[in-house]
Image (cartoon, rainbow, N blue to C red; front, side):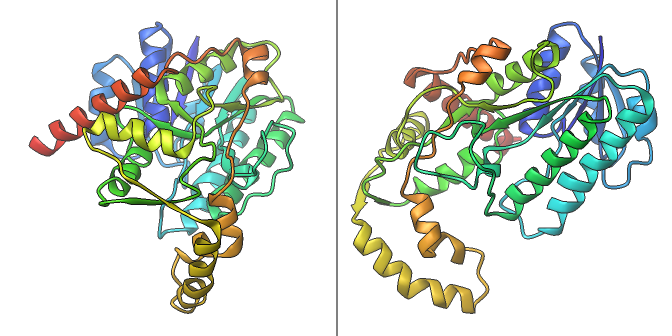
Length: 331
C-alpha cells in the first residue's frame, strides 16, 4: 500500500513514518525544506518538498496514494498564532480537497484532546461537548469539521485525539516538564492529585496504523492515551526519575491559588501576557481538575493496546529522550 505522511519532521509524523517503513509500506513524505529529507530518503522513503500553506505540489504528492496520515500541525506554545489557522485549518482544507480530487481512499488525521477544552474534571469520552479554549484547540476543531465535511463527499476519514505525547524526539512536553523540575520546589494546587493522561509517541504511531486499516474506523474520532490513571504528581515524579532529579512538591491550597490569581491576573491582562489565561479563575479551575480521556472506543474499534504503560516504561522513555538531548548538545 502506498501512503503519504505529512508532518514527518514532528514527533508523531516521524514515528508514524518510521513505523510504516519498518512494516514495509511504500512511504511518501512531505517536507518543507530539502535538507529535511536526506535521512528519510536514506530509509527508502519517497521525499517531496512542499509546504501545506502553499500546496504547490500537493497533487503530485497525493497522486497514487491510498492512505494519507495527516500529522502536520502548528503546536503550542507559539507566538505565531496566525500559523494555527494557516497550517492546522487551511493546510488541512487544502490537503483534503486534493485527496478528494485525486481519489485517495482514506485520511487519518491527527487532532488533539485540546478540542474538549483541556481538563474537564470528568472522564472525557469522544461524545463530550467540543468547546476548545485555546487558539490551538480551536484550530484543531476546525480541522475536524473539515474532515467531517470531506467524509460527506466520499472520503474515508479517521480522527485521532492524542493527549500529552512523550518519547524520543519530543520537543514540547518533556522539555516543558524538565524546565518545571529545575525549580527547587514545584508548587501544585492540591498537591497535584488530579489526573493527567500521557502517551508514548510509539503508541500514537500504532494507533495511526490501526486507524488506516480498521473497517469500522471511518467517520469516527478516537482518544489516544496510554489508558492509565496517573496524577500530575505521579507524572512529574516519573519524569524526574528519568531525568535523575529529585522532585519536591509544594501543595498549594485552592484558596491560596485563587487569591494569588485574583491579584496577578489583572496585571498580566494589562501587560497582554499569554500567561494571563492560566491564572484566570477559569484557567486555575482547568489546571486543578482531572484531565482523563478513556480509550474504550479505540480499544474496541481499532484493537488499540498501548504498550508503554508501566512506570518503568515511562522512566525508560524519559531516559532515552535525555540521552538524545545530550547527544544533540554534544553534536
